[in-house]
Amino acid sequence: MRQVLQKYFRCTWTSIAALAAAALLVASAGIATAQERSRLDEVLQRGTLIVVTLGTVPPFAFKDEKGELVGFDIDVARLAANALFRDPSKIEFVIVTSDGRWPAIESGRADMGVGGTTVYPDRAIRVAFTRAFIDSGISIMVAKSSGIKSLEDLNQEKYTVANLNNPQMADRAAAIFPKAKIITFDTPSGEFLAVKSGRAHALQIDTPTADYFAASSAKDFEVLPTLLTASQNNGIYLKPGDFKWWLWLDTFVSELRTGSLYPKYTELYQKWFKKDAPPQKFYLPPR
Amino acid sequence: MGQYRAWVEAYGVAFLEAAGWTLAVAVASFICALIWGALLFFARLRGGIWTDRIVDGYVQLLRNIPVLLPIYLIYFGFPLAGLLWPAAICGGIALVLQNGAYISEIFRGAYKAIDRVQPDAARSLGLLPWMAFRKVTLPQILVHSIPALGNQAVLLLKDTSLLSAITVVELTMQAKVLTERTGAAYAPFVVAAIFYLAMVSVIELLARTAHRSVRWK
Image (cartoon, rainbow over all chains, first blue to last red; front, side, top):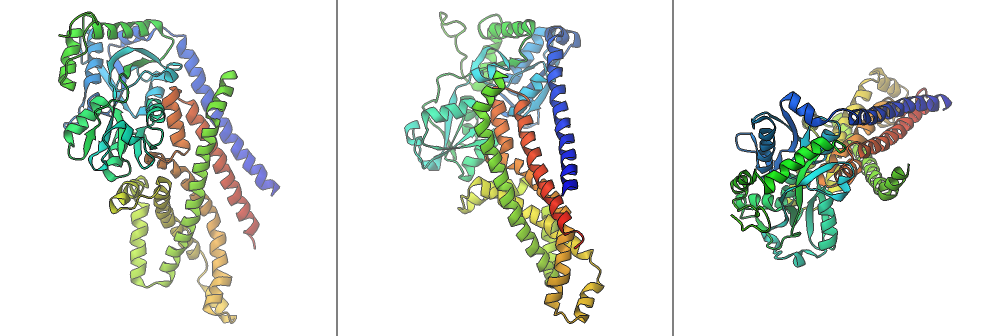
């Protein structure tokens, strides 16, 4: 027995030590890179922009029939590359799942991230965001067979709602339909499968994504007319602590949304959402 | 350190709950997989050529597909047949189906390792075939199986992380939810890893103690 215990503890301590060493390495790498020069200089010197994004959130960032990465947010990233290098093709995309975004930024694998990513105060402690470049809104899609017509209908114990594993959806569900049962997926495709298979009666999803899927499978799904929130800010995210790089990206977003790049913005808005972009300034009439 | 304390206060309970789910699914699935594996093994031992072929086909099929496929098929497929079972049960069934296949092969391997003359020797001592199996063959099968069963339990425990794909909030899903809320890239996954490591260590300790206590008897 004693021998067994000794051997057991030897093995366990070795693996704990290995884990601790790995954690230390990661932590020290974080400290070391924070002291280096700005990412902006690095990007300019490299000559390409590395962008982490999602591949499964139409119409923001998704693969089209030809398997190419397209979408509104992808075009925004290309505009950024164009602003940096006068060439929208000087860009490299890293496609991850939703919880792979933070390590990709933290480790420096990518210069910036974009793609259906919502600014949230909890997140902003460890990730830097630019101002929002789009208000994506949130909609509820319901199975047509469920008979749910409004948010008030949904707030009943007999209904199940599929969420993504992000904080916005969990907090909204708790505030707006606390009685409904919530199940949580790590991909939008899981949410849709859940409603299609009858596991859930409804799902939460960004409004443009809801509209996109509703258009392609109108016989199964319906988008509830009442929006859950009037506004959901989606921004570009980056590693915090690099003022020069953040300032460039935030200036780019400001120009895109309200300044010299606004004509491009309206063009992309029409292309992907088939709608007019919000006005350039609140005191200017919409174009 | 204040930050760590705030984290433990805010998310500690959620992590413990998640660890509870991981452990509950793993333990229940392993017990069921042991029973299912034993049934498959006996069916092959006692049944005719057709039983042997059918069980062999099942074992080959389940061993050679990623367990995520049966997990998805059962979770998303059963509701189409009107069976709305909870996610943890659906995932557990998939784990039992695959691990039962592995475990039946572990038992078969242990059985093959026993010298063929032993049952004959037992018969010559006057034991009935059934008693010869119970008193001579079966104990040796169990002793030979213990190390491999311990390994299988470890594999099963780690495979419970796949249940995060079907809404079971076990350790991996909890880490994913937490990293999404806080934007913390590594810490939630390191905490999950420590929990897994602790559980695996206990399994290994149990398997070693069990094997040691029966090895030379």
